[in-house]
Image (cartoon, rainbow, N blue to C red; front, side, top):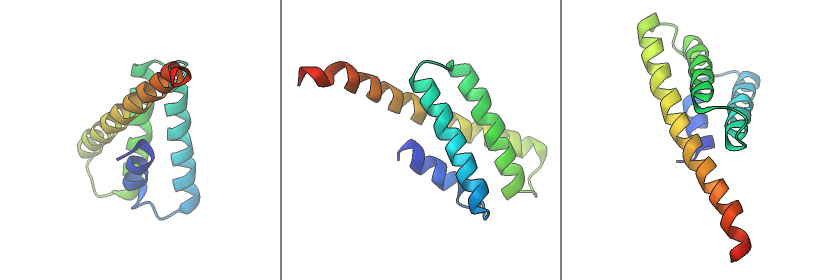
Length: 100
């Protein structure tokens, strides 16, 4: 599953299309900043966690604060993994594409 597919799956329960697009755009923007080397990995992780926590509070108001934090950490970590893989692939393509 790609980064965008992962984000889309996470945001599926969000019923406000405007909010969904804003969150998706923000996450993709942060991923792109990381891929360009303009954001450190730990900052990316913190930003993803914060966004995931806010979204979870909207879509799952019945969860406790601890459950929201745990789920946000879990989702953010998955997004970080996807962002790292896509950034690595992008860097490799830029590096090796001229040789093909």
